[in-house]
Image 1 (cartoon, rainbow, N blue to C red):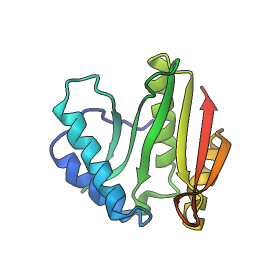
Image 2 (image 1 turned 180 degrees about the vertical axis):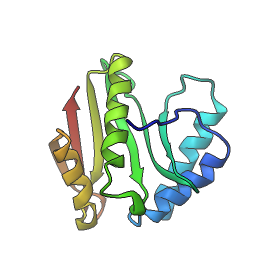
Image 3 (image 1 turned 45 degrees about the vertical axis):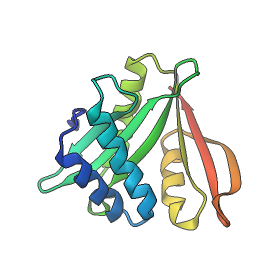
Image 4 (image 1 turned 90 degrees about the horizontal axis):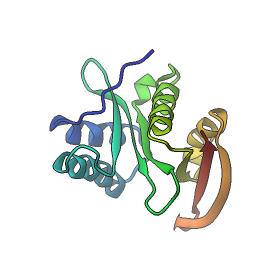
Length: 158
């Protein structure tokens, strides 16, 4: 069983930005958003809108999730981010992070977890990952992010 930490520290801002960059699929604006969510959460009291699970490696963060309750819904949560260092792919870290996030959502009374991703070809592994972990693709919106870059919305009843 993997041990993940949920507390954030000052180095996580740079470490998560570096991790998201290493994945090779996120643009500079998206990397900045990932970093800003850490900054924003660290500035708030515990129980802030965003929840994190961090997988620490020997020299850097190997993976993380960021998730939270969707405002205005009945116990629905969204997985905002899941990222795993490319050197840690195919070792079960992504699945372990996702399962731990789902467990925490259930513990908090959540009944559903949703995730959005791109429909670009380089996101095919992410879409397969969600499907392999019991998520259903509920919708696709063409050209959502940009021309040729649609949005796929996945969800799972927990």
